[in-house]
Image 1 (tube, rainbow, N blue to C red):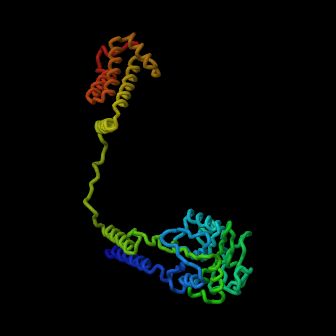
Image 2: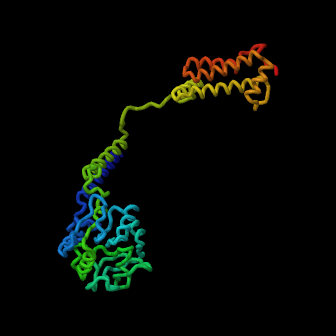
Image 3: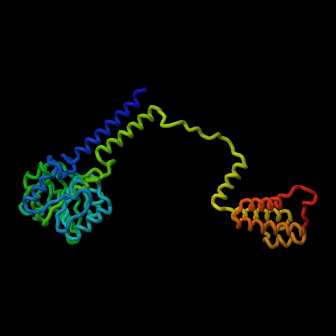
Length: 375
């Protein structure tokens, strides 16, 4: 039982190692068809093919800076999904005259919404035949793999169909540009571009514009190509996961991370402590004026109760009643109220304390036979 926490620690360290290894191997032969890969599923041959056909080719790396509109941009299986802002920028770029070749097994959510491209829930073999003469010389194109066909919309032209008639390639016009969507990205990958008429299809797509570009920005793990953020580099990712593993391991072993902190003694606190705390807050935030107003209002309510007049009596009515029943008390009340306002304005704590004491004596006089006021 005691060894289980350390088994968890070892498992987390293994995960960290796998992530570092995967990050280091990124681009060798990924399933998202990177142009940096020379493997069968990579697309490095597409860049070489474009150069052989006299088309300048580049890749988008480090940032999603779209090329000139007279360019064919290839997007293969984005490893990092497009944001809504990026999808909107790409649609504007296509509408301005760009050509987007979008080859994805499952479709990116934002790109699918931006260009109105959808797929069915069925499966078809990738062995397309031309549905219309959009690609000259292409009689059959495919990889023989199972793919999910498109769901063609009313304004979308089907360029390739499977043997059973399922749409495998769509052409969508957007403004002055167009989107060519391929259900099977393997058609343009290194291991399949020489099969059937795939090379003719690749040539037709390359020659659709004077220049070629491939989006590698969304093939990167977290879009960090060329980033100086060490926490997103292989070593940094490994160190972060190692820290998590050690932290979890120590926590499972019930080891302390620091000295024990004892909670405060439970129980009710005295009223004097609450009064002291409120006083410190009022003093810290300049609450002398508010304190004086609260004390004056409390004293006024006490005097109203003692005189027996209505509780909603105005300050003027209170002064009038006091002047008739007890002129000395009326004078004392007027002087105490005036001193409280003057003390609050002076900024002196001693003066304010004296004024509040005077108000308190008026509000709660000592019990004596002469303390009763007659109305």
